[in-house]
Image: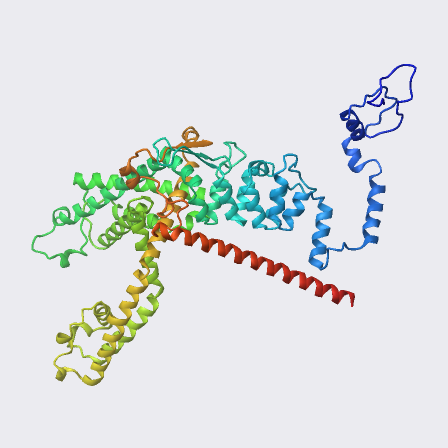
Length: 612
């Protein structure tokens, strides 16, 4: 090798350097403008030889002896720190890994700020974000998500960015939200008509491949009920895009198909009841109570009744086939939905009502028809929960019913106590208490406020146990209509604002679940139109509010005011809120410092105990 300060001649060799060098040394010499004159011999070791080949066993043995003889490092004081040191050593962690594992977010941000800093994998095939997630270092993960190189770190993960986001949704949803915040780009004047917001969906929506589920991140949010993630603008725009492409159309089609079932069923029941005497060919002199349980011949002559029964039967069978397909696909998830049981019961009662398809429906068939109508319309009400305009009110109603059912046992025991008591004390001439079932229904009606004291308990002379009866009636009035009913009303609607907010969230979650289920059933050609990587929105341009109100995919209220934490406060209070936030951050810093000092004192104490 020739010195850079010399000019080589064939007769002058005094500035030539003869030696053996490694490849990095040769590269550095060339960088410093040295010239290679002649190469005598070159040895090259392949990658596998460098790891497990040449001298690897020798080096590993002596390195192990060296580590044992050196003992634990000075900064390792307790057993937990020793185990962390061993794990770090065996994993061959880089500086980024070590800073992430030991919860130093500022160091991680500083290292990532150097362009030369590579995002490398350790021996466990984990990058810095993997290490932070496995160690559950929330602050480090937030620092990575807030850095300009967030996408490079996220996509360099060995399982891929989709699996990484799925893990974040489960373990640290706040970090997943921060990553999604980075996917929103705003351009232009916020008050102008050309104000543009661009949403990037690549980190929450996988590619359309047979081996990969593109909706796995969204399904994970739904499965673990990460409401803050589901209501994020990026997720909302993704779901809204799918809803506009095929969601609302599928919902309307299902609604129309169900109406095709319930409307003919209702028409059949009303028609047979209104024309009962003609269809059953009964004597006009008979009262309904006399002929309701009569056995009459099965006639198939009325065309209207036959057409309605045929339509109800065919449509009910088609709906049952659809339910079987859903059961086969959803399995356990299908069995957890109450509305599915309502549908099965409704279709079953409808088929029992029309088989055999006689024109006349008397006796128990009237009861079956009534139950079919009840479950049919109740299921329609539950179906409307997914609509933006009515969904929240139906969910609020079901929530109130669920609250009432929690105290139903107490209500039943009180009714039993007073109904049995009055049944024993009052004679048979008091008709509402003549039998025990009468007594129970009378007490139930009296609980709602229909006391009717003058007709039932006056005059006192007709009462066999007047004193005890009036004392118990006084206790009943205080306990049932006043205290119990007010308690039930308070439980049902006392916290109406909270119920309304929860209803909005539940309705939104139902819409998300519906869209995700539909995407797996609609044709792939339609799904491709909704599967986009980016979406551009102009929020200041006019849109159809009627569509959004009736069929839109609207998020829960309160999420539209992004970044406005105090919309109801006057501007004069905003500086005070900022000062309060600064004080809160300072207090948090002092608390972390005290925790660090506490850990240090504990380490010193354990070290002294070990030395003693």
